[in-house]
Image (tube, rainbow, N blue to C red; front, side, top):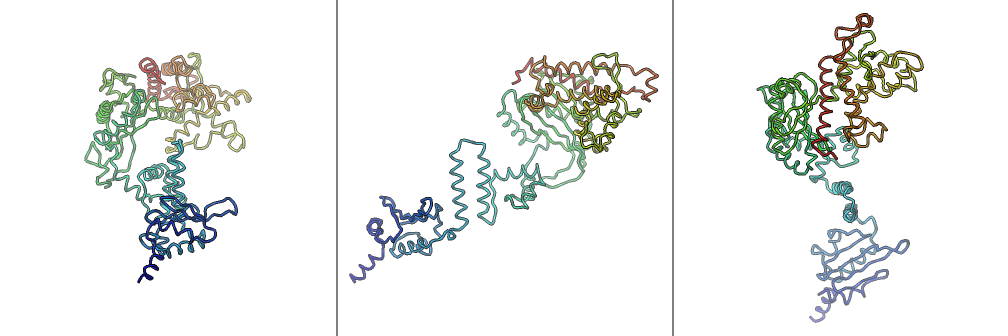
Length: 560
């Protein structure tokens, strides 16, 4: 009996202390060890190149074991066949088996998933030690992608779902390509749509959830950033009813019918890049009266959310003009007292992109020989200039087969747009382009053609557009164009030009037509080669409002 007990003692590891006394005797060639009060470490070195630990065994006080191979922590289940489910080295035969197994261990014996988990641990450790917060998203996406490769059923984090949704809704074709090519593991588009359908957006002015969101967003803005413009636009949609996110969508708010337009209300800060959708209201045959009521509700909601609305901006269609007029008590003026903030002013503007397209369309719709607009000189109102669209068409026809062109922005689409292409503001801007102005000057100087009137017309609207289309504080420096600089003082060159441009529009509007003989020669209609009344008034009105807004801001606010 004593002999049996002695053999059992030699086979069983009774305690960590007894293990410490005996383990070193069992280590074979190539094994090194470190002994502490809390654990014993046995390891093998590879000294062929850079010295490194190939494998290591760590035995703790409770005899539990951890094993590393090339700095990768192996999962306990990979050596359960030796230690059993409890993962304890409680028998010397287990310890001998571990040594034999690890001595013959090969790199391929480490599973890919274990290497990936180790890589994730290293990446987390690396970026947690960095101070560069800009790279946090980059590293988190890498870790998420590595984690997704470890499981057959993909479970995405909330942050990654939001990022994927933004990517999908901004660039659906690119999203589908990257997902199908398996460059990244991304959620299926159907899954993203299901999630987005459950979200309640700003579907109406009285959406409490969106009002709470705007209030929270307002608390994060500086006082200057709360000075905003309210943009009003109409989006045409195909009538139809859809059941999404537990709601029936598509019914108009002003009629018991399917909506054919969406009335959009958006805000943008004057002193920052902050933008927000305030409300999207489905409508059936919008009217000025209903738009007026909706606009007042939006103004009141923004006032309740502590925003300061400085101006309303819309395109120059009849309903919007009538709504502005109704808000001005029947007489359209540039500025009134804000209906919901009587102590503050409220300015009115027509959308500048819509205006530049309207000027282009007026010019293109001329029925005269050469499609002529007749206007006074900006420097001398008694001198009459002629802007002939035919001048640009002649340059295009001359250069269209050339490799190098004086007017490269001119094309078939620019000069002969379809009704659909006329909606594209970029095609309109290609008419009012500096290269066209230079080409017209070349035609006048080198070939003696009478193109300076057309050049002057393009120059005036090009300068005006450059001033109203500044979206970057460094744009003027980059393009070396002072008219592309933000307005920083009331005496700046841009302000001087806007005042002069407004006076020129007034002079043009008041100027009588050309002499009768010249009118008959050019075939000018009754309006004498002028812009239409709607376009002329809107352009003049908006320019005056811009001047008044700049003066008001420098007087009442402190732009940074």
